[in-house]
Length: 88
Image (cartoon, rainbow, N blue to C red; front, side):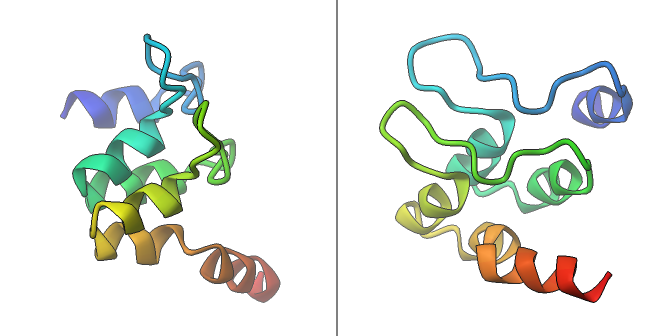
């Protein structure tokens, strides 16, 4: 519920890395823990950077694959993102 409130606020930057040195954005955190519903909500924001990289150059999509979170990986698949943009 708290995540939904934050995501609904246009003043909240969904690409802001969490504190610490990892460079994880909220989308990275969703990918890391396999939270497909949160990833989906984040991806609905026009200002989300789905290609954001950690300090080790890992995208959320790659992180989801590394952690075997296939539902999240499908949401983050760059090919799927391109096809949804082409359709619009």
